[in-house]
Image 1: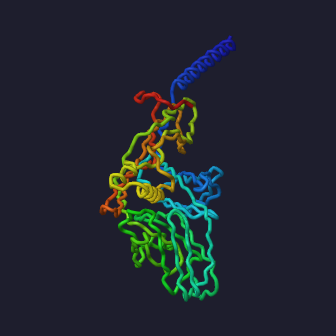
Image 2: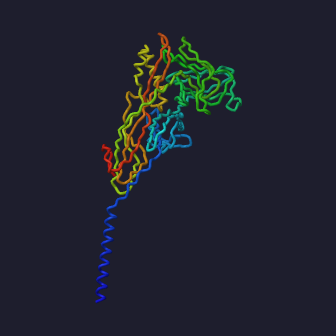
Image 3: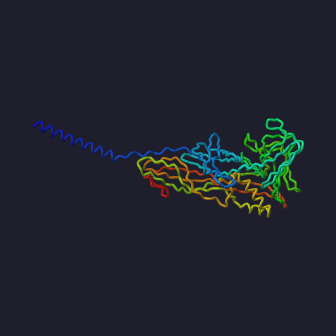
Length: 431
């Protein structure tokens, strides 16, 4: 009898224990873990772009892109990208490739707060080097003619002596290369070039000043303020030279002199004034993105519609016509101004209106379970005024040229619990 009682007590105790364990399990299943609040991430900056061959308008692969200590080489599609930069401020990019003239591009990021990704898109064209070699014996002298849109002639007077960059005498015939090149936009002030000239061998010095004559591509119009500038490769800046530039109305040529070989520019003085930037909202296609899974999800790109290119606020043809310049002079002046402003924008051509393009912006976001990522996009539209003074048959005229250009794209992020219904749903998707 005692044995039977002990067995019954044991069964009763075991049953009670199982009930307690079951109830504990139910309580445990009902309790939900608190959602993990995402930690704010510091701002990141990205520079991405494409390099084109100016002559063929095709993508240029194998271009070395240097930005400080960072380097990239363009892909078969001419593309490059510097991502996850952590500092705002100014960045200068240099593009180099064998048989092409170097190109530069400078841009500046403003400070951004946490949970922002700022992307700047760069479009650059590079000009192939097509040398024009002329043998000259300095003792007998001679003239080198440089063709192109703006013809130039360089004269080496007879009985000129020459030394190289190390001050060693150079005798006999010299194979001189003289070509027109693209402008180099560097530093806070850049006066556009009527013509930019590279003379080789670099560093040659001449005992006599070498007369340099540049054709005026216009007949009844000329630039009011023209100066000779030399590109100092040590400081990466243009330096105004002391020798004056004069204009001969009879021959319709600008005249000056040089005394050593390097990179020169016959520049017409232009004032560049920032009119400030305006911000526009842009359409973010990938928002919101919901994570309905039980594990964190990673988002690497956000698709947006952004503005691209640059445009003249008032068409150049209208500005020139309003100044009373007509005919061939109007056509040539328009071409010169377009060429002078292009280097500020990667040597690409202006467009009638800023284009809208679709782009995947690189990001690095983690969406916690039961959260959605809300992305808001803004884009800077830069505005700059270029002031050029010209002399016409009816007197001096001032051309104020306003350019609007598509700037950096800024994405800001907000993580919202799926239980929070304060945000509506647009595009985007779920994970």
